[in-house]
Length: 188
Ligand SMILES: Nc1ncnc2c1ncn2[C@@H]1O[C@H](COP(=O)(O)OP(=O)(O)OP(=O)(O)O)[C@@H](O)[C@H]1O
Ligand SMILES: Nc1nc2c(ncn2[C@@H]2O[C@H](COP(=O)(O)O)[C@@H](O)[C@H]2O)c(=O)[nH]1
Image (cartoon, rainbow, N blue to C red):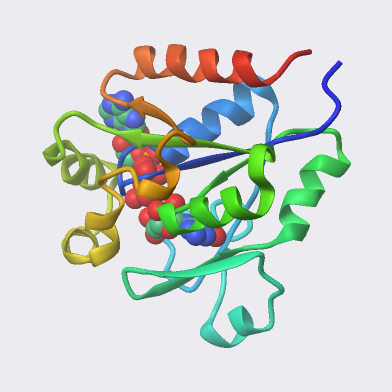
């Protein structure tokens, strides 16, 4: 019987498939998706309280956050309350973070944070995926020019030997890799 609950942290470059993997973990393994906070504007189809808690700079300041980062000129942050909500219900959590956030989770939660770093073989496919997702052209350009985008293309040294690295080229193959990681961690 599994005693302690985990948070699966999905990290990696923009467009690498973090949200897609998080949704898979939610649907296939009934994990609780931690909704994080951001000051960026919603993308077409994104809903407040579902994809993010959309904040202003003022409301963001009032939150009690476990960690907070600036990514492509917007603020993002996640709360301990968000994690505890899932654990209270007896569920494992899944959260989507940039690599700076993933490092903080590793430092603060140790083995309780299972870090999965997503990458792709051809970096050009990332911009293509963002465009196909419906992101505005200016938003894609801004993302590609940001220092955080370039930083998150590579596994950070602090996560070497810690993160499970998954190459998300072919979705069917990605699911198999994710299933293997979950099986290794969770014993029912
Ligand atoms: N293996 C795959 N092959 C092709 N397309 C994929 C694959 N995985 C995800 N996608 C698609 O790529 C797009 C980007 O995926 P997703 O939104 O999950 O990325 P992300 O890492 O969360 O991005 P961001 O950090 O920019 O929010 C989506 O349209 C998704 O459906
Ligand atoms: N450290 C944190 N990173 C977060 C959080 N919520 C989302 N993110 C990451 O930010 C970038 C940009 O997200 P996008 O939705 O605008 O593309 C991406 O890497 C997300 O994973 C958070 O609370 N903390």
